[in-house]
Image 1 (spheres, one colour):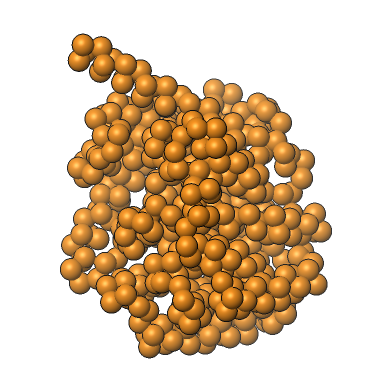
Image 2 (image 1 turned 90 degrees about the vertical axis):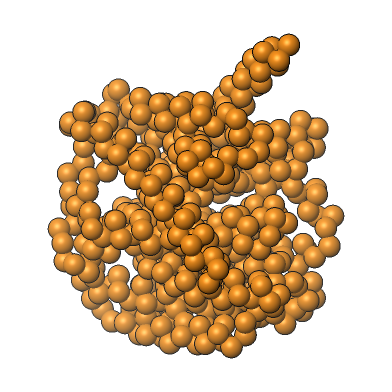
Length: 512
């Protein structure tokens, strides 16, 4: 009888694996189909489909809030660090190339097949999306086995999941794409998997090591290690693992997170205090995004997407915009610049996580350090805008001004926002969730998801983070319009949205 139960459980695991594959991958393909032939990003459609799917699964009694009945989807929603490691590595490469004056081009081992598998997605792109799914599962399962964090309903099945994920990711290569050196390309894929797992393990142990001093989450150390490796190996040519995760890692993680977030819609709206989190998060999305763009356009004298998109992705560590840039939805120059512009502002997370960790222990925000960091942000912001408006065709000079702006605006957005929220009745845990949601901040999201503010916040962050993504029709519509307008952002709508967002966050703090 025990053997029969074990066989049924094993079959259930396979069902969950395949069901998750058929839920997430088509969601991304449909999103790409909807925006096919336009310059709009599919991230917006993934938001809508993911939230709707999660809500439908719960409302039809197929699952409970949190999607514990779909454990593979829930597992993928927690692989944020894996997708970010690749972005940080590529960002490290770009930092070395720009500031080290190194050659900016390297040969590519893979030449994509341009044949469309479905409308808006080529065969090679579809393989990259499916491979990302397998990679996220395989790498996460192996890491949990090595670290001994294999808990939950899937704990006993991590070995088979690791096998399925890693083997599937290695053999999934588009047969119609041209590969210049096949054995080398495949070996690179395996090496990249090993390195990513190694970074995750090192980051975990470093976070444990310093925990008694300051509770820095492992995502911070993953960023540092991955960025340093990128700077050292700046000429490294990507293999299939980095290529897949850079193109589709963030969309797959977001699709899973939106499904989990959508499953909590009914549950969270019944909780006291979540209205303020959602209110500030929604209007904060508008203000911090369009307010930052308005500053760049008015004082920095630039409305080019090559500056606005990666600049704001870095200035807010913005999940959706980072994913759109790295996937190439907003042009090649934005795709090349985004990883570096996300990396540099991320370096100040040692201050963010340190101050938040101490604040969490005392139950309230450390006010003086927060004010100091916000003032430093103002100085950097002014310096960056001043340099930005100086006409210069040199990419390095333009990037330096964007980095100064991004560093400054992120400090203002995080600490200025937390200071503002401290005057409301919101608890620190809810303030952190509201802040992460208000700027779609990948680092804060990952830190809270790791349990930085306790299990309750870790369970709720997926929902609050997902719901404020509904403001992205404004974001991606505006960037889509800009791409169709010779990659120049229209100014008046940006100014109007920035003002509306400012009124909204003030009202949410006062009245909610």
